[in-house]
Length: 175
Image (cartoon, rainbow, N blue to C red; front, top):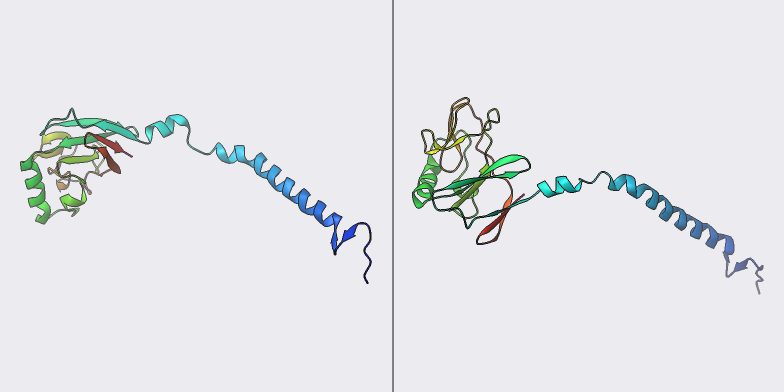
């Protein structure tokens, strides 16, 4: 028969429990002390407010366009006509500097949503202008088609499409 001392029961010492409890309290205390430093690296409320923009599509007539602001940048939201959609799909096979199908740039063909910043030097292109009835950047002469793809000029890339989703038939969330 084995005998145990008052500080030991079944081979477990009270001191072992004290080590584990003190370590647990120390770990929790350290985590609580570090959390404010980690949390302060999160974006502030004003930055989070700019992270998404909701646009009401109900007021945009077919063939017209509005410019919304997302993260301080202009975003073109265009309600395309059937002719514009057909021209964009027809141009999928054209010789494009930055090849991209129209279907890859839109979720719903009637709505084209893209950043309104020229990919050459960051100017804002003019709508319904240029050689391809899309957008024209007057600063250095870049021409974009009805899908926002670069067709002519010094711009190397298409007008970028931001992340967006349709919340319902009349509202889109950009960002």
